Image 1 (cartoon, rainbow, N blue to C red):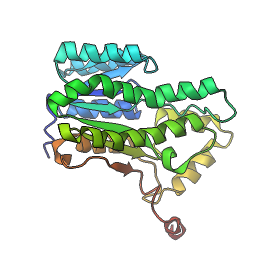
Image 2: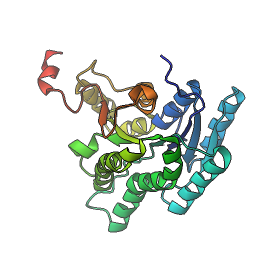
Image 3: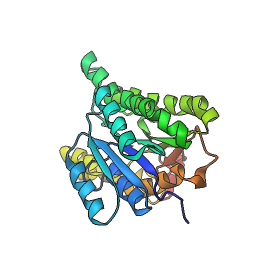
Length: 264
């Protein structure tokens, strides 16, 4: 199926994570479809990803950006405008489950909101004039934590809840411009960051198996590649009448009856 993404300028925040991260999977899946990924991230790993894509004859751009600094975000979008003159899609993917709990300071909580929520608003705000010209779309990467809670991560939970609110608000605000706004919801996906968390636990292997056993479909975690595949569909013309939606790629983790688990 041709998703008609060839030549589309797609801004992806949080896209310079380690190989195997969701941002990495999205970036390289976009390039494989012929889209032009713009990596906006603070990690200089993005330089290597831009180089890798360039060596295969694909166009890509990395702009090192502190996503807690709105001036740097504006500068990044300005650079995209200068080089390409347009933006077709914004994928807000940056996010860190940083443990800013009730035990932490107000400053910790605000810092979590800056990274996990305000960066989403700022990126879309600065990209909006170009999105209006292209009648592009917005995809926010969300988390089950916004709906289920998790414990010990008030900042991240509040931010991800806010992301869902922005997704629907933007769908309403921007419908007159033909701009779609959706959120992709993730539950348990085994990324390098997830592995680091598991390895930090005394009983990490046991905890990992317990989590897998709670996922109704196949008792396994969602692959980053499966998330990337759904991203491609949602930003493409094949999803042209979908807006204001929360699309779950989670093996039924959030919604399906837990009675299913007793049959395994």
